[in-house]
Image 1 (spheres, helix red, strand yellow):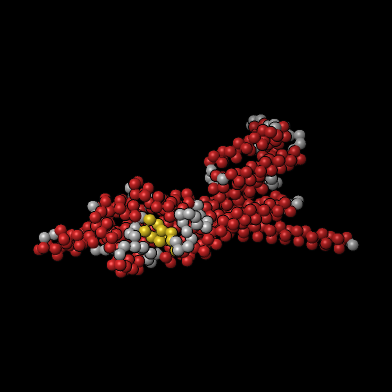
Image 2 (cartoon, helix red, strand yellow; image 1 turned 45 degrees about the horizontal axis):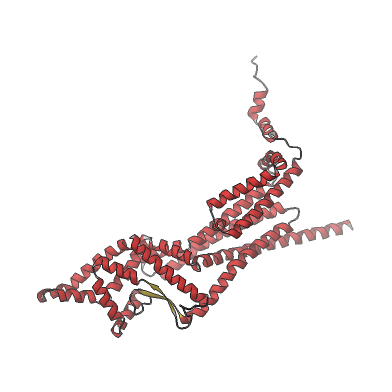
Length: 430
């Protein structure tokens, strides 16, 4: 009879551990995908973050070089520069218009990257991206008075940036003539040729790039709504499953907490690996011209910077959980720390919570992770910190109910070999 009962208890324990392990695995998988949902929601669907990211992208010298190719092509696509040079030259020198145009173009190709790095041009780029992304967000949110989801298009307007560059190069009149021709029927062939060469959509208005057209908006709206929902549901669900798993591990919660810490750590490392491997594959697939590969790598690195921050945050959270599990463990260093802290935790309950709150405030001021810069996650950290202090006070009160201040330090000194040798006195010589 006892054997049957023992077998039943063992079977129940195995099922219980299997349930906790399953919850941890599911929470880890959900947490992995939650990282990407958070990244897309905060990086791609937030106008301020997108504007900041695009400004950093233009600040990269490789991107400046690649973008300058497009801008110079815009300036010289119509052939107006050569025509103006030819008309300005004497008849006997008009044959030099082609090499002169090539020379001017070479000068422009060297000058434009420097102009792109200028503060005024950087500000124009920031405004253009902010306006384009704000328009996109209005459309994805259902449109409005100024933006319609019917027959509309989202464009990145580089009109002012092109005007500034043309003025710096002394080509303002040529750019105005080119815009006039591109807007008419005669510019259709030139635009088609440029689109095929550059791989972008160039509308009749010079200096604008079409990002999205109306026939793509419905799918984009659905995707945006799904991402926003997943960015909220997946993190909350993952955290809830971790909490339930640790709570169900009655009698071995420290081990479950340690396992959760390794899960957080593993999610962070996995996201970093996926970011690296995916980035290499995407740049290789999209960048056919090897000269533009550094620019593509820079765009990917900057564009996924928030994903990198989220992954590092997961690693740090995992290490924090592992540290908490170690502090509650049976190792000699952990027991010494609990023994040393026991008198303070017992006699200064309010001070214990205040010290934890001060530490958390310093972390929030430091803001090492994205979550430490947002209200709801910070409130969650406050709750976890209070729970941790309460648990530590309860454990130390059970283990060291009569501990005195300095008792743990004194015991450590007595256990040192040097202290024992010193206390034994000098060794007599025979």
